[in-house]
View 1: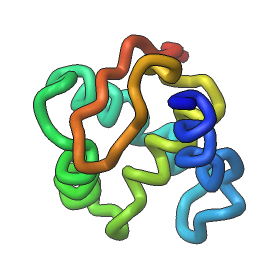
View 2: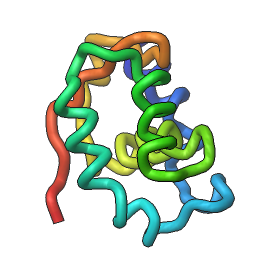
View 3: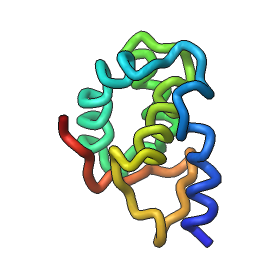
Length: 101
């Protein structure tokens, strides 16, 4: 059940075209720094709060980093436990790995 809910949650992040103002260049530019931020606070800060802070830090429109998080997970660039925990924006999220370019 968790897997289904998690896939539903990240579905709108699968394709960049679903978010105006973000493109591959922007994501490539901040993804390493954002991944570092996510892994630095693994499991300590709710993802909604962390993404809001990251939007401000990177000078992005509100909601951009949440979309980037969904995009990176949906496209398997970053990893988390999809089976044993349901992703909730009000809860912390543990990122277990990411693909380095």
